[in-house]
Amino acid sequence: MHQDGLRVEGVALAGIAARFGTPCYVYSRAALTAAYAGYRDALQAHGLADRSLICYAVKANSNLAILNLFARLGAGFDIVSAGELARVLAAGGSPEKIVFSGVGKSRAEMRAALEAGIHCFNVESASELDHLNEVAGSLGRRAPVSLRVNPDVDARTHPYISTGLKSAKFGVAIADAFDIYRRAASLPHIAVKGIDCHIGSQLLDPAPAAEAADKVLALVDRLAAAGIVLEHIDLGGGMGIQYRADEPAPATTDYLAPMLAKLAGRREKLVFEPGRSLVGNAGLLLTRVDVLKPGEEKHFAVVDAAMNDLMRPALYDAWHDIVKVGADDTATGAAMSYEIVGPVCESGDFLGHDRLLALREGDLLAILSAGAYGMAMASNYNTRPRAAEVMVDGGSVHLIRRREEIAELFALESVLP
Ligand SMILES: *Cc1c(COP(=O)(O)O)cnc(C)c1O
Image 1 (cartoon, protein in one colour):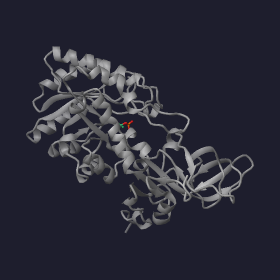
Image 2 (image 1 turned 90 degrees about the horizontal axis):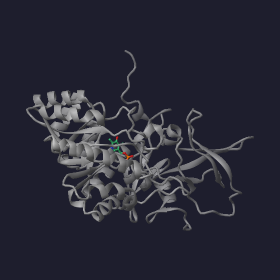
Image 3 (image 1 turned 180 degrees about the vertical axis):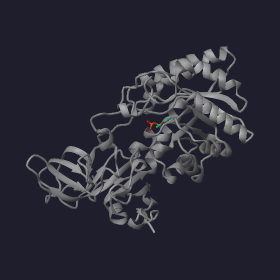
Image 4 (image 1 turned 30 degrees about the horizontal axis):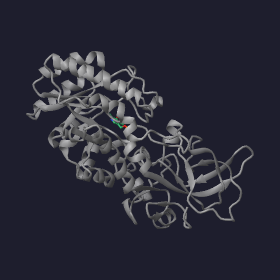
């Protein structure tokens, strides 16, 4: 550690806190770029780079600066709403590299995406297919379509982020897909383009994704034999990242290898939809200790970030490593076990349990691996302004979202006359 404490690229976090305040999300351009390169390199190693499209899953972190960075690197985007479509376009993303996922697309969203000219709709039900056929017909267009199939594979991850079991709300059962494809092929305003599959998130074992790929490829071949020839295969996202120092995640190449090996000899184009693995480890949440509150059973460190800023601990009981930003000095007492909690009025408002730290009030902490599903899930609960976001780029820092002001939080509301 440097004299001025923890750094991101060349910039001291203490300086960022002084300049932009806390809580503050801090991202690293170099880390985002490296994560994207990890996918490129893995595809290259299997000779698949030229016919692959990496569609960043926008919902993981939808800040315009991050979208713009990925667009500049050549990425496409996986969106789940008209709002995300608008963000991608505002950030300079190409419409023809957008895939549209989600179980409940409204007709207005379908229209917006058709008018933008997106690459593909990942259709998740027979009914959605009919709605899309209707909307495309009213615009005098044909909608490019993949069916999201549910391969009934257990992703062995947290139940809230597991999507590939039969019991999940996502996709159509793989056993029903053949018939739905036949229907799709008969609809006048639908153009059958591909197939899509996404079995869950924070997957650390490559086997379930490879097993899903097997099932998808078998269906693709069966469809081809029946005269329905697909142009692309979309294998979704879901690769996990390292959240704990003592629980490493597989490298991108190693995670993808078993799946990519199955795709090497084929002719279809490939689409991937990574979210977390492109942004998760590229961001942290910077927060300050406001109050130390020793207790009989537990010691609390109340920080100025809370569950409204980073919901993953409260929602999934997720772990984030939490480290001190400042260089240790002699004025610091002995380390002890703290509950790191926010000021929100909920017992579920914690950021970390039982963390061994030597703390004083005013200390800065970095909550690591907070780049994915952090700011994207932030809310204004307790009328708390959402945090500022900054991007470090080498030796410089750019504000990419200013901190909200309190008056903005109720600016859309009105009292009765
Ligand atoms: C959330 C989501 C992703 C991204 O998942 P990660 O685990 O963040 O990689 C990809 N595709 C679909 C359909 C999703 O819903």
